[in-house]
Image (cartoon, rainbow, N blue to C red; front, side, top):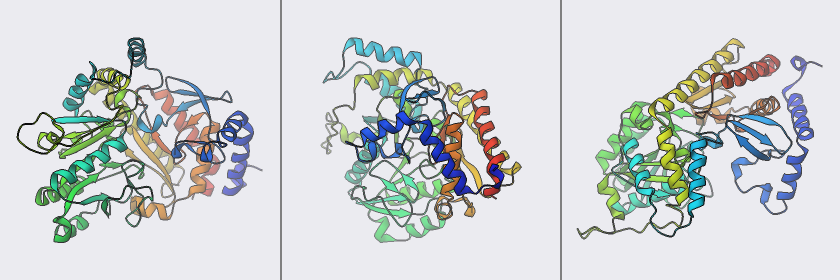
Length: 442
């Protein structure tokens, strides 16, 4: 029976069976790990049913599984792997650090230079380092509450600011969230912001506004410039601190997405790729805010403690300095141009096969998401209600079988190692999928 005559459920059932039979070592590894880890993993996003692949090596943009299969990596460690898996300059920097010793328990020679390069690139007056983007966002909320002496934090449905700061939609929060007084508003809704501005019970106690200019986990939907301007105006009129979460989006323009949009926040959070693939997070912004961490201040102002054993770990500090040298404006712009072209070609394919209202790609530059469902105006909250999870999964299994690795939710992130021929392989595999299965998508 040809695929044109088969149903979506039949195709998915066969794809799963093929996946299981093709990856026995990965399954065995998963089964053994499940004796100690719930669901066999220690990072929820990496779990996939019936079991995730186990990787044993990587080079450039290729991954090799325990079952001997090689994949082009289009996930890129959820944007943290921007430099690929084996950049020689970063490798040499880490090797040098290992030779010289680590866990120093004191100030190292690289962290000041790394801070300088980050501040200059993203227009921060002062910054502090953490171990992850999650931690950076947690610290930023704490700073905003301490500086403003207020409690409420405005966030948006579809937003993700870390494992304990997740807001799937306006009506719910992750049960793992830290217990701050969050207001969860609709993303990209200017009318809502205007209404909020007229509510004194909210504006009088608003400490911070935290927003992604493009929601990463929320489907790669972008905020309009008018919406971001309305947040800037709300912060200015209320005295709240406007925070741009650029943990993912800082790679989309040489100065971060805020530089492309031309809107300056009070604070910025960063992370992911900036330490060359090592653990890292950063928060910073105006000196008048960040001086709360200045133990040497003599103006009598309060001083906050910011601890963290690995905040300045020497591996991340050295790798980060080198990463900033590698990531010139030209290199970054070329990667994002490649991604923009890829997304345009994907959407052209969906039009060619008449499925553009059921399959489409969103994003900016080198980051994108492929959606299966009904567009419903293009907003994430509406799309989720009509998401075609079975079609999404069939596409994922198809790409895996064809040697292309991406997120199960069909999130894609390019690296500086991707080239036109790699994009063509992704596009060719996608077109073959559409040739076989567009009849179940229309």
